Length: 280
Ligand SMILES: Cc1cc2nc3c(=O)[nH]c(=O)nc-3n(C[C@H](O)[C@H](O)[C@H](O)COP(=O)(O)OP(=O)(O)OC[C@H]3O[C@@H](n4cnc5c(N)ncnc54)[C@H](O)[C@@H]3O)c2cc1C
Picture (cartoon, rainbow, N blue to C red):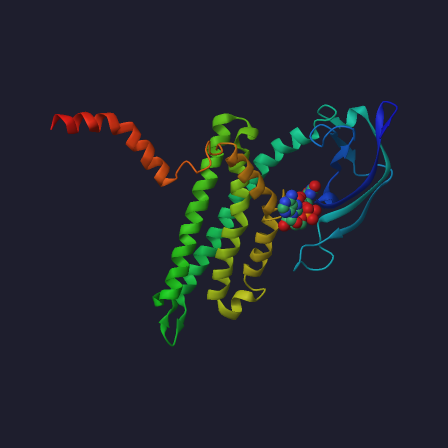
């Protein structure tokens, strides 16, 4: 709510990464509830020691040692911020956040490629090293299939990320690459968890142990499907953007309806056919 030439912020925020280490927080708050969310939110810089701001607790990701969590549950009680704390113009928070998140999502993808390649390299090394009663794992068809599937998924994903990064450079406008960034974001947790899961299994009991990184990778893959927006939301954005490039059918039948196409083709060539037949 506005207060003199500034604002007072009251509310709670869950999962603010690294807030415990930060000196200031970037806070998005509704400053105008009478317009839509795209225009009614503003962004503020709030010093960590501001009166009324508390970290209720630091939450950890599943599997992390207790007490080491870095995702803060924050509570703001009537925290005063001046107009100089406003980042950008009033009502611009959504636009600013989308610009930051666009690049951030591609960075998540680049780090994911590195993690997935690491899991893949370990998987190949294990397949070549581990001898069972049936011989080396690498000689088993089921293992070869897992290696082939993983390689394909990684390279497909890498090319999708490269293409999206290229489009960002080309257009210099994240809004024009929304669909592509959402596609990367939606594909990321699948390739990550698929490859990490196969690598874990090929390592047997060692794979699930805390002496290898795979269990952590599996949780990390789930995090990639949540942080900066859940997969379901990105798929929805992707589908809506793709549908904008298409049109509904102009008749009762789909434009690819074969009898309709055949009849149209007959009409199109009927005169010529008649002339050619008459000339025979
Ligand atoms: C490791 C980590 C770090 C984070 N760091 C930060 C941070 O620094 N700052 C910050 O502000 N936030 C941060 N977040 C929060 C993150 O942005 C949210 O967790 C995420 O947007 C999902 O919101 P939610 O947790 O409220 O889940 P919900 O909105 O409750 O969603 C739960 C599930 O419901 C479904 N769902 C939700 N909405 C839709 C929809 N529209 N259509 C279809 N299905 C839907 C999806 O399956 C989704 O996974 C972080 C999260 C994680 C996991």
